[in-house]
Image (tube, rainbow, N blue to C red; front, side):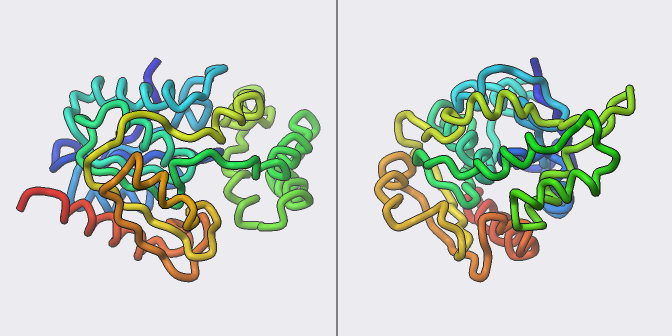
Amino acid sequence: MLLSYQQFNAGEGVPLVVIHGLFGAADNWRTHVVRWSEERHVISLDLRNHGYSFHSPDMSYAHMADDVVALLEHLGIKQAHILGHSMGGKVAAQLALNNPQLVASLILADIAPVPYAPRHQDILAGLNAVDLVNLKSRMQGLEVLNNYEPDIKVCQFLIKSLYRTECKEFAWRFNLKTIEEQYQNISAAPEGTAYQGPVLALKGEKSAYILPEHKAAFASLFPKTQLKVMTDCGHWLHAEKPDLFVRLVSRFIRDTEPK
């Protein structure tokens, strides 16, 4: 099955593929994508079990990377710049390790190629606490989530995936059951032979997703990584400082392309 995707400025320049993180969707990146599309072809997609894409019981990075490869083949794209945030960054990393010929450059937004300890327990508990059958409004769902996750911005991000079905019942667009069952796979590290192309790792200064002890993993799998720290940002660096994020990505891509 093919991933759901959106295209902008098709056919202009080496494409940029944008891959969202856990619980996200392509729609979360629309503002960024529109700006990047001023200078090149941009594709944003919904990973399996997210957004409008198909649901599957498997969320290994090998399978998720293969989904993106299948989409590129469907679109006739021979090579692209690949950007991924958080879980999407691990998908992008696995894609580069498995299919380096497809990746002109790699941008990893606040994620390292390492396994992580569980860190979404409160969010998962909050999502399960939302009584979809008896829910009256999205605002009510937001209030329930906020009882488990104190950051209201995270709750607002999550509630974007709450929608009404044709039967007027509330449901999550992401596949919560599979995400819970596959959480160990989602926490795992990408694996493979080192990718020798250019890599930009963007770290949120206040985030603990990229730490000094991760330097060895980057050196082993992505030896040509340049690290840039975005000050006064957390894990949601692209949302907290969108203008800077867009500029850094654009500049890096331009610098990697032949003059």
